[in-house]
Each structure stands twice: as structure tokens, then as C-alpha cells.
Image (tube, rainbow, N blue to C red; front, side, top):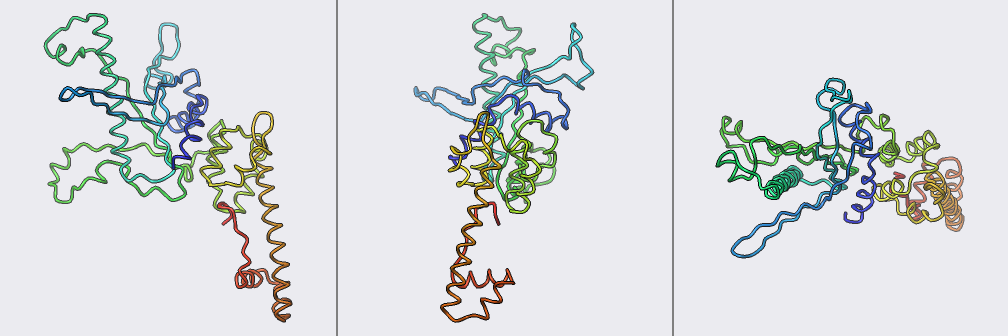
Length: 336
């Protein structure tokens, strides 16, 4: 799984893609957030404390972390003195998953709580530098003024796996509540995750960046005919795909052959995904033709002339005979 982390992290460091992702996921494709509204943050969240004269440290690493300015209320409702739409900052955390995590709600809670904790500590340090005076004992104890506010944190889990997500989408799904009285259950807080399943995401065509090609390609990579059709329909963009998008498609679809061909397919501005697929298809076709010729040699040597004649005209029967002789073309992972 680690080998898939770096391409996915590199891909989502792009502010234009993040703006595009949020515009589709949060605003139905309306262009509300621009790349200028997106600022990258340090994804390493470190919390330290002293315990028995020993410094303890907890490190939580999210894949990518951004501060994003979003409109207050409806996009046309609230404007500032310059008649511009008023915006507030929120924290967007992206967690990429190539495999299902059955404790994802707990992981998200932990990361979000750590993020809020660090915001609180930043505010505390700011007050200390400014020698803040406290209105009451509660402010003094918490080092947090009644008027202080934390930035909201929104974590989005992006799942690239080929199987449908069957893990929990909320905390209560993995909490044993069978014998817990209903009135107690209702008091226990739930925590739901924001999950995007790449291979079943329905708003792919609303993307305006190469997120459209990445999501669309992966939604079709399990079927040869569907993939070939998709590539032909999106040929204009796939012939010059940005390198980090190419890398992400390769690792998330397990296309080792495409990765091997990368140096040959690299051109100014990106990589030619179409040419790579054409070479793979041609290579598979050549392998199949070679194996068919070997099959006919076996049938001739074994004096199975009737089977040979039948195989000439019946593809299914020919496949059956090839399997019998152990003459199978090893398909690439997306040709199933």
C-alpha cells in the first residue's frame, strides 16, 4: 500500500485539482472555490506533552492538508465592504485509501481532534506572546477566550480500491450497541466520514481538471472493451496526460506495463496514455497470435485434425483447446 501513497499525495498537492474536487463534491460542480482560495499546510500534526518528567509525542500524518476559503452562507448572500463575497477559512484534510480500512471513522476522529487541539495550542501561544489579559478564571485556565474560535476541519476520504467500500462509514457502525438501552444510544455521539469512492463516483463529468480522466479511467479499467471505448472517447486529453496523473492511474489500476513504458511515452507537457494502451493491446495481440500458431502445431502433431478445423471457426472452442494445452495469454489487470 505504501507504494501507492506517494503518487496519490503528489497528485493531490495541486491546488487547482483541490479546488475542482471541492467544487464538485461540495457545490455540485459550481465554480465557487478557486485555486487562489487554497493554501497548503503541513500535513504532519505533532502533539507533545510531559508525563513523569518524560516528553511524550503523538504524531498524526494526513496525506495532504489545506486551508481553503469558502463563501459565508450562500455564495451570493454575504458581501464585504468592497462588495466582494465574504469568505471564511476552513481546514480540508485529504486521506487517500487504496484498501478498505475498517476503523476509518476512528482514524478520522483522531486526526480531526488532533487538528483542533493544535489550533487551540496555537491560539494559546498567540495569547502568551501578546500577554493577553483574561476576563475570568475559565479563560485563564483554558488559555482560550470566550470569543476565540477554531477553524472547522473537513476530512475527505478518497477510496481508489476496486471492491465496493464495505467498511464502516460512521462510528456507531463499529460500536457494540446491541445491549445498550436506546435512550443511552441516543446520547452517544456518532461520527460519520465523508467518503468518495472513485470507481462509483457519479459526478465525474463535472470535473474540469484531469480528475475527470483519473476517475473515469479507473471506473472502466476492469473491462477491456469499456476501457478501449473510454480511451477513444477521451483521446484528446489522454494523449497528453500530466505525469503525476499518469502515475496515479498506473499505481491505482496496477498497470505495471504502463509504468514500464513511461519513459517511451513521455513528451512535452505530459505522457501519452493512449499510445501506451495501444502498445499493450498490440503486445497482447501478438502473444495471442503466437500461441494460436503453437496450438495448431500441437493439434497437428497429435493428429487432431477435426479439432483443428473446429478451432479455425469457433473462438470459444479455440480458447478451450488453448486452456487444455496451457497456452494462456497473461492478461493485464484491466483486461478481464
